[in-house]
Amino acid sequence: MSALVDRYAALVCDLDGVVYRGPDAVPHAVEALSSLSVPVVYATNNASRTPDDVATHLRELGLDAEPADVVTSSQAAAWLLGRDDVPDGATVLAVGGAGVAAALDEAGLRAVRRTADAGGDVLAVVQGYGPDVTASDLAEAAYVAQAGARWVATNTDATLPTERGTAPGNGSLVAAVSRAVGREPDDVAGKPQPPLYLLAADRLGLPTERVLAVGDRLDTDIEGAVRAGTDSLLVLTGVDDLDAVLDAPAERRPTFVAPDLRGLHDDPSAGHPSLDALCAAVAAVHAATDSGSTDDVGALRERAHDLLREMAAR
Image (tube, rainbow, N blue to C red; front, top):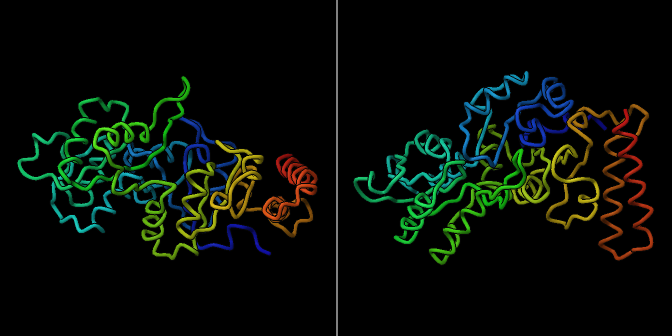
């Protein structure tokens, strides 16, 4: 069987924990991505940064990336509004960082920060994360949602990892507005919902089954890929480890698992422990767990860990 990357027409790759951690590249990520022969779209739940900001960061790490190679949850939210027949030029309240308003403007909508600036009806609100979001911003979102406007959350990640610890993420801010207005958002654009992956596939001009989604989180990257009908690779360089994969419910199980992005180029015919062998071991644990064969699970789990250690040591 061919290397993993050769089985797909393109990649949709998560960023934080996969390509970089803060300002620095994840080990082996730049080399693995630079040697690909298929296109890559970088898809992120981060709504505060613009594609230009993200592409600049990627180029600083040594990757050949342009803004068109990046899709954000803000862009997916704007895309959803277009699919919901919000007309061109409609006024939309933008809550969050610069990336939210930029995505709305790019989509031909008129982004405003306050309803007082609208000069007419506000047809929708897109709520994303921004480090400077205030209680007044959340109140504006609540007022617009209560008035019956379409309410789209860029993502509902409850927490945000920072250099100082764990901070409230956009999901926590969305929950505050939801509690105030007594309902949930009409749509969520980011992972684990499928729109971000669907937009990435649309930009590539490919059906989702021809695309491989790459991520480090089971509850966002992998569950989103499952919902979008996309095969997935979980790399163990970020949030979730192998034990989390072995314990994952069906809706969060990746198609493939690898220690890092070098797994994209793994050659199963090379005669050493391969990605396919590791994935078969993981699948055996899932099958035993699902069938209730608990006597076999311990040995199968240890086999998966042994293969992972051998792959990581190469």
